[in-house]
Image (tube, rainbow, N blue to C red; front, side, top):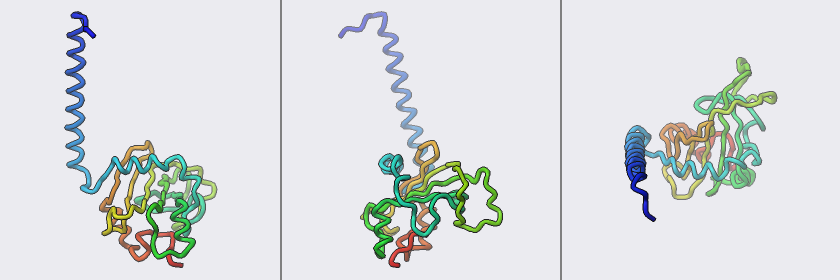
Length: 192
């Protein structure tokens, strides 16, 4: 296919602009990586999230917390709602000593818009809360991923769907190390 002479300068400008945009994007990504935690795997976090973002509300609520909305704690949010997939639910129900590969726990992180939390205890149910979703946090058991932290892959997704963290973020690992005896999980009690 021959390009008419009058269009060649315009094509050249488009090609140069596209190359410049690509180089700027690569430079931005390299700079962003320097600022990120070393264990962040945003692409895998996004792929995992895409796999269950539209179905998790059909799962069971996490054992050990109220069904529906309840009073939470930072860094997750002051109002939470937590779900587990069938693998995680079966592991808790069977009294397993640890979660199997494929177990997933998803926590909706809400702002307490319109709710007076004064005087309410941690995990108090909030039956009238309509939700003010800010982010999701999740844990996926991936055998061999991170043996030093129970093989859990942690992710945090912003309310707009962008990936905030993924992999073995230092804050997640340090906090969940408090419950290493319950396979790194706070609420759903194993072995009972």
